[in-house]
Amino acid sequence: MSKLEVFDYIERAAKALDDNLVGFSHAADKITEYLTSKFGDIDATIGVTARIKTRDSLKEKILRNNLYRETSPERLVFEMHDIIGVKIECRFFKDEAYLFDVLKELFCVDLGDGLFCPEGKKAIRLKLNTPQPEYQKNGYAIYRIDGNVTYANENYNFELQIKSLVNSFWSEIEHKLIYKNNRLNQFDNLMKQMLNYTHESLSGIDHQLNLIFNRMSGNAIVNQQEQLKNMLSLGLNEMFATIVKANTGISVGITEYIDAIVEYLTSASSYTDDMVGEDFIKTMTEKVVDAAHGDISATERARNIVLSDDNYGGLFISLMKWMREIDYNTISIGEDITLSAKFDGTYDEVAKLFLRDINNDFYLNTFFHIYFALERGTNDEDFADYIKYYTDTIMAGKTQHQIYRTLARLSELPANKLPLLDTMQMLKKIG
Image (cartoon, rainbow, N blue to C red; front, side):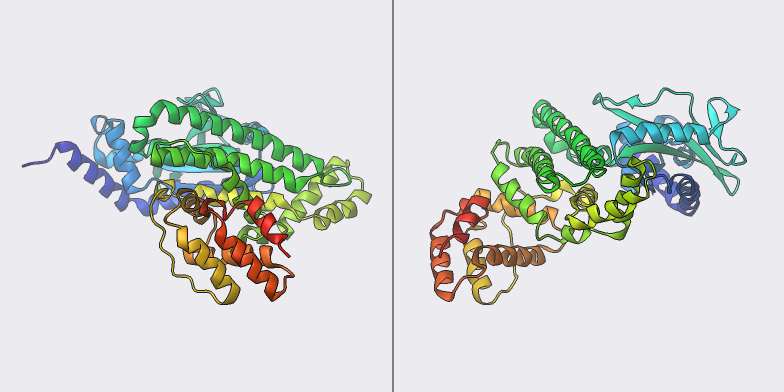
């Protein structure tokens, strides 16, 4: 039985992409190098990145949008407007508009047909005659500009986006949970509603994080830790509640478990290494000095502010960057967890109590599925880190007799109560 012609078309288009991948890569490098040179030193910019559409993504788009009806497969990859995707990532929503204004000032030479290029740089062109930001089908605004670049006498199309950290993160979540996940169709209206709630929560996070950065121009960082914990808890709860619903078809409350994970993330996880760093200190110092209108005395005060408090802004940014890389379709809520981590002494006793019910209790199982998705090691490494954190927290400063009493009480608890913060506080107090 012969296949439809469209499949031959798709394979030929994928081969054309493979055959010209070196050219696409050089073109992408040319764009990112230029934009990095112009935007890299702007305080609002986090970075400039580029990606080339993968074979699988190309195939999906051809079928989804009936692109095989438009041109030959060999030319399709050159005519597709987003075969190369370029992103200027910034901190906050407000920075998107600012960087777009900078972009318009930079691409100021009118070449006609809506195309503009920088002075003396005709090889890179942007179509700036369309209103920005655009509004997507989901109703959210996005700065998305078509462009093309000439490399080795060939024109390569690209799509440039300007996205805040939160918007960038949101796009990845929406893309992975909805755009590429046909399983969610059965919950379509509910998923859309829940994702809208998630977007609203993330918008609040952007506003709150912006406030925290701005507050650093004062004499102290007021409640920075608690504010960031609240923001993380809100965003993670909204997102993972959606994933739990998508996997099980049942809405369950996971707020207490998210709070316990956030406590770990902000106190003992791999992200705590990113809380204070020279780049972040430099950035924060410059912000405070700018706010002080060049007051030299503010420089030392700014550095002291950053160094005297745990800086959770760096942790938050690192966590969000990692979360964009997670494949949310692989978070197998409701499925068994297999672990082979080995422990000694008290750590082993505590680990056994968790392992006893990790595949028997839905909430304990869900807690670890979420936890493993968020930490950056292997499941065995992350489980070992968690057991050490948990044991050290509840056993700190105790005698051997007190440790026995604590283990005895721990063994009596329902499995769903084990990871909760209230449980840990109760166990800490056992003397």
